[in-house]
Length: 267
Ligand code: MLT
Image: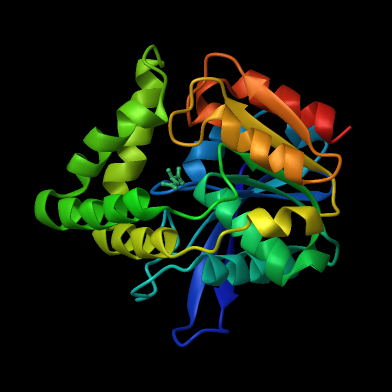
């Protein structure tokens, strides 16, 4: 059973609430979704055998899923990390296993930078440590213009071929489109501004002292296998798993392989 928790956030200019969707038993694992998605990208993970060993909590980050947009012009990774820290503190007194996909991985890096005492282990899935280069930053500006001009369907049209492998299941494709088209335009714009200006974390990799697993889809064109190599080579003792048949949405495209990788890591 999935239970939704509502967590007040009152350390910013606008008090707001966040919703976390939890299933399972045991120590807490916090699941951080990518852009421009929500907790539903983790539904297969919440229903996996991992729930017998962890209380899996999939957060809706501010403005996503069931968490309201709080009025921020920019969703900095630091703000999202402080949100995650408040959620962890409200749910447990212990450090937690953090699982972040793509933007969720950037948030996980910021969480480690700002609140390392809350982190017991890291799963960095389909993400990268580096900041946006010149071309990627220009791409963020173009995406802002696209969503303002043409709406969310245009963002979904542009992203779906990169998020999913060419032969991805039609239902998975529909689920991803539903999430993107349901994310408020103001959230998408605030996310894009935060993604564009996020910090480069490559120099921080050597400071990560918790057990870390880097997961990547073999076909991921957004954060390719080489990005997982950078992270795994930079973090002492980090493990790396390449999931066959998956592109960027590994937990949705290959849920059993994703859960198996985390199951071995959390043993
Ligand atoms: C994501 O999946 O969160 C985004 O693709 C991340 C990004 O665009 O850098």
